[in-house]
Image (cartoon, rainbow, N blue to C red; front, side, top):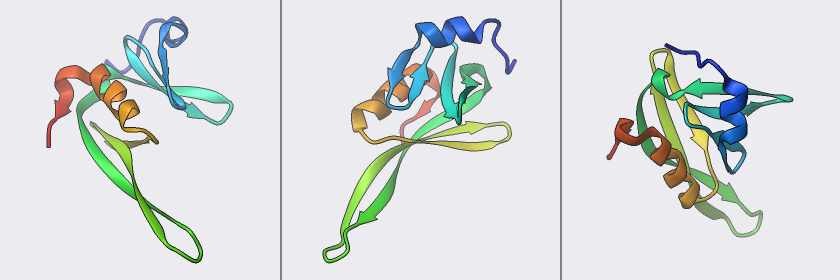
Amino acid sequence: NCFIDDPAADFRAGKKVEQYRVGELALYIPAGFKWDYLPFSAVESAEKSHRNISSGKCVSVTEKKPVVDLKTATGVIKINLEKPDSMSAILDAFGSLVNET
């Protein structure tokens, strides 16, 4: 089932993790002036990943930033984060779906 009965209540009760919200039933993702949600029941697996961010004009600086890859029946959704603690909070919400790779 890819829908939840009362997403507004779940959203309000959810915990803010960077720009996302983690409810009891779903992960809420900002989409412009509204929010989309991804029910935990729609996720087949969750994995840790990283992306490289390069910056600096004179001196190049490369920094690794955390990413959570959420595999669903329709593809992979990448949740880009800034802090490792945020990755842990998102992965904790998915519990047994987390692949430790």
